[in-house]
Image 1 (cartoon, helix red, strand yellow):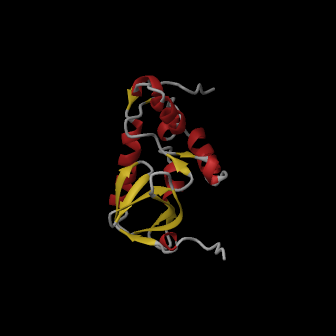
Image 2 (tube, one colour):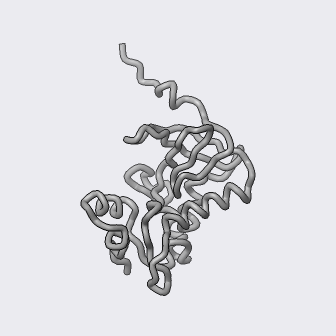
Image 3 (tube, helix red, strand yellow):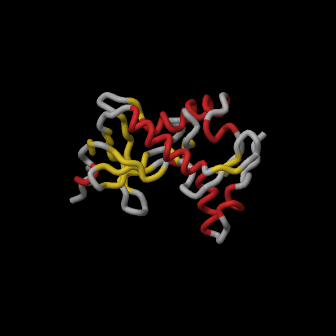
Length: 169
């Protein structure tokens, strides 16, 4: 007999104070949670600002998320969707109950990208708005995080993999 229900490990919401691992990964009660549908720059990834100077955009994304948690001291509620290849829970998370979607906030403020491969465009409008108003990484140039990871796996170095792997109009 085959049962098509979600695994028990994915059934219950995870609620608690969150700490930041990187721009799209948090930890609650020792459990790592990857934010669903978005992709933030990697911790060692570099972007160019409006003066074409390199800066640590991966660190900037993580710092922005940490500041959000510091400014709004409410428990984070994560609703599991899946598990990733590293065994982390993949979830949509909100700050407070009910609260704002953290993934949406990151994309809308230019700290992460909508990842249509998974989100099916859920955060597309937020990304378009951030791009149009030059927020966060949209102020300059950057490589999409998924392209950066591919370059690094092929033996590239952070500066070379970060630098305008994808030309912007």
